[in-house]
Image (cartoon, rainbow, N blue to C red; front, side, top):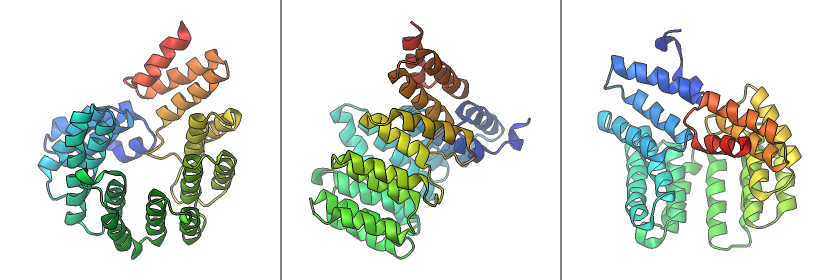
Length: 302
C-alpha cells in the first residue's frame, strides 16, 4: 500500500506508531516542508514518550507554519512533558516555553479550546515565578464557557480544588451534569476522588464512566490506568483493557501499544509472566522503540 493511501490520523488514533512513522517519513521525502507531517510525527513520538524527539518535530512544524495555532499547542505539550522528565534547571526554562507556546496558540486562534484549556491548567499548576496565576486560569475558563460550558465548569472545579475549597466536588459534578453525564467527566471525577484518597468513590465513578455516553473518550483505558496506579481491581482493569483492544473506539490518548503494555503490567502483577510477555511483544510489534515494553519483556523473560 502506498504511503499516500494511508491516513496518518487514523494510524495515530489506533496507536500504530511504527507504521505512522514509516508513512510520514515517506511523505517528508516527497515534501521536506510538510508542516502537518512534522506535527503528526510529534504526536507519534509523544505517544512513545520520546519527549526530546517529539519537541524537535513540533518545533519543526512551527518553523514551517508559524501562524498555525495547533502546532504551537503541540510544542507546548511536548515541552511540558520534557520538563516533567528533566532536571530542575532545565525544567524551569522548558516551563517558560510551555507558557509562551500555549499563550501564542491562544493568541493565534481564540477559538482553539484545547489551547485555552491547556493554558488554564498551566496557570493553575505553575508557581507564580513561572507565570502561574489563578485569576488568569479563571479568565481562560470564562472564555471557554461560551462554546464548551462543561469544560469551563471542569476548569472551575480544578481551580476550586487548588484553592482547597470544599465545594470542588460539587463543581466537578456540575461539569458532569452540564456535559450530559459524558464518560470524560466521570473519569475526571474519578481522578478527583483518587487525589482525595477516596478510592471506593473512584471505583464507582469509573463504573459509571463505562456505561456513560462516550463523546470520543476512552473510559476503559483511563479506568484501567487508574486501577493500575492505585493497585486496585486488577481483574476489572484487565477486562477493561481487553474490551478496549477489541473495540473500534480507540483514541490517540490511549494508543494500542500502550494498552498492550499496561495489560502486560497488570498480568505480571498477578503472576502471569507468560501472558504478560505476550502483551509486551504485542506492544513492541506496533512500537518497536517503546522502551518501557522492551525493559518489561527483558524482565519477565529472565
